[in-house]
Image (cartoon, rainbow, N blue to C red; front, side, top):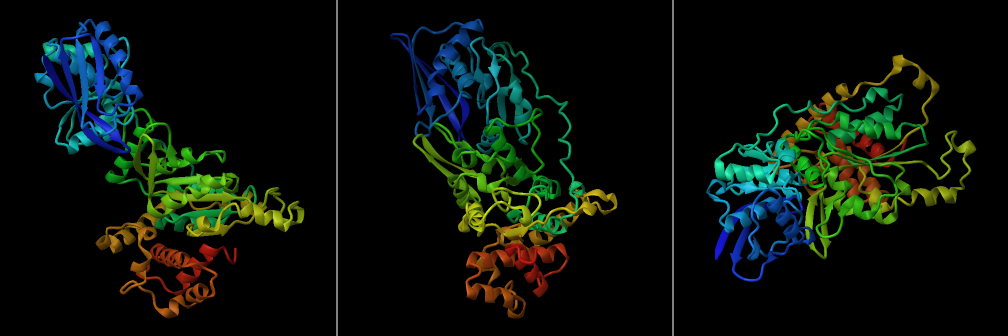
Amino acid sequence: MSYAKVLCVGLVGVTGHLVEVEADLAPGLPAVAISGLPDTALHEARDRVRAAIVNSGQRWPNRRITLNLLPATMPKYGSAFDLAIATAVLGGSGELPLAPLDGVVILGELGLDGAVRPVRGVLPMVAAAARAGRDRVVVPVGNAAEAAVIPGIRVRAVDTLHRLVAYVRDGSPLLDPPTDLPSSDPGGPDLADVAGQGLGRRALEVAAAGGHHLALLGPPGAGKTMLAERLPSILPELDDDAALEVTALHSIAGLLPPGGRLLRRPPFQAPHHTATVPSLVGGGSGLARPGAVSLAHRGVLFLDEAPEFSKGALEALRQPLEHGRIQLARSGGGTEYPARTQLVLAANPCPCAKPSGDAYCECSPLARRRYLSRLSGPLLDRIDVQVKLLPVRAAELMEAARAGESSAGVAARVALARRAAADRWAPVGRKLNAEIPGPYLRRPPWRLPVRDTAELRGRLDSGSISARGFDRIIRLAWTIADLDGRDRPGREDVLEAIQLRTGEGT
């Protein structure tokens, strides 16, 4: 009886777990059995691995082969175990001495010709190996640059099973990760392109500085989409921890750009209004994959023509907006993805959306109310900033001298405001005003004086705003004070926050 063991990594959601791939070869009728809660792709690995071994010039052992994936209680998904399974089978048959691979994590999918193909989720897999104390990994050459992002890990790459066999037997060198990585992504659209819309620009700046959700209401051509698309350009670059989170999510979804660099720019997701609930929050057969709300983690989720989205899709966003995470339960197992994103909604005032204003609108007041009521009250109550944009005037559109400030100038103020907020909230482990719990702001030393919040208290008592709305307006006031360089908000900051929240006076 022969036995071999090789290390691999399995993913549950965005979290990786070290997996031991065991191979036991015993006398008996030739067969391959796989245990350890494998999915369909793993069951099919029997045929892929056999063909890859034979077509790589190695001998397939005609014995009863039992493959076990430990821990056996954790579901295993995908084809990233192929290369580890092939190595364990060759080691168990005596064809391959596995001493050079002791403690090495092996990842990769096998083609029938023995080629090692890239797989999804290599970044969180390698990160999990590092957390488990492993410092050497072998990955497909197509994933080498991505894996090399994790510090403290020695990454080697293979393009074929034959290359890995030659390394173990003869010491032939493996491939190194590429060093000639492409330059970082070019900058996106600039805020200077937006004509006029002083209120919209102010709302965008406040939303960026505090991490607040934003709703833009107005006629076609007012600049709603242009403003939303430029929000990432005034957000700070992601720090190391956030960049690893975002890059890992895109790795799992198979959406990483070539080059393997960390994603430093805040992501921007703009799904079409026909998007389904699973495409927004995550789903799929077996293990649920991240949806748009998770792919926009630490960035912007933009829903253009928001009333046209299905009611179920919009309501499904309420929980992740409140908690910053999305929990998905499926018959194949549950998982959790981060979803701390800034939501931006854009909507026309009515179904006909005549650009000429109320004088030419063909919609009745009832039709207008029904159209905007597709955005439910509980959803809008979670949107901090809600502004109504007016049509752009000819003078604003044509006069270059009145062009707005560039994204660079606004981004500098946003960065200063975020730094002030991060320093203030460091004792509670938060960085953004939008993340601070309401009760914390209502207690000393952060509670604002009655004279500054009299208008806000009156609105709460009259029922025109909810308790959640009260807290969100207070957070907005702190962000406005940070942007204007004040230590604490005053009455004028609270009044501006009320205006940005309710859209009054716009």
